[in-house]
Length: 330
Image 1: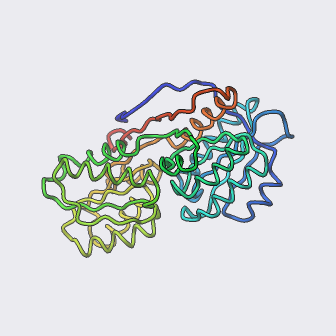
Image 2: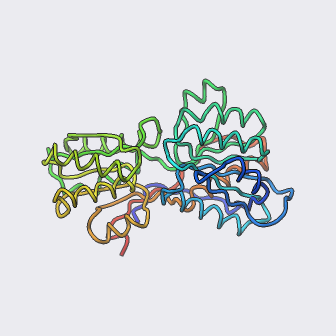
Image 3: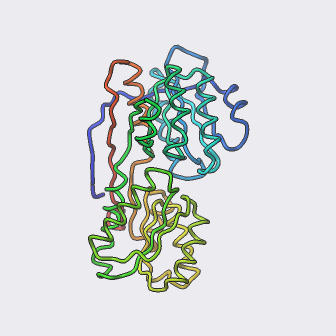
């Protein structure tokens, strides 16, 4: 893979969360939560809650698997419980999960917020309760954090540079003036905005014309519908740049349905397995790998560092992101 950014990480990491099985299952109530505490009785190990977006998205289920695997390998260090929401737009449910974890008395919360602003007040309340909070994947809004009077470290990739690098894989395949379209994520999410800006920067530098840019809210079915409409209204579109792989797969379906499966160029972001298959088959050109299986691990490691040393500096940590193409998958 073509490395955009990498840094060394300490090997001191995580462990497992068994404790809250019954209370969390009861409090979370229903299929919108995947609660998987580890086996065993309560202990003196710190309890870490991982709160994610939709576990129906392979990227986040992969993130959960990576965290749980790491905890099993470091069970002597901490306990882990994994929660996620059913729908990435269900902000109220994610806020409720934060409140439930505060009530359960966890020591740390590692969260991939569904919205960069709406989760901040709930996370401030968690901080007020003495809980360490680490932000992963989607950066919380700086101005709202300042308004709430808190600093929460962000552990994750540079989404703008990642999207820029993925878009550059189109260079040499598109000409100056060619028409492209963008499928955006949720517009109130920082990572969605940054990926759009990365795509726009690449288009500006190469002289491509963005003839349409719409939010498909990270969802495959919405992306299919929107991309189909884009291709009908703008048959001159030569490429679709999707801010995540689920939307890229929606664009693949739209291309097939509109007879563009053989010539439309599509790029995504996340490197889920289905897109790897699509890249190998020539239906997707490239994606960005932000190492989802390790992203929560990076956040948990940082949380454990802050628990071990309350005086440690609260600072952001940038994680790797790489471009994945058919060549790198060989």
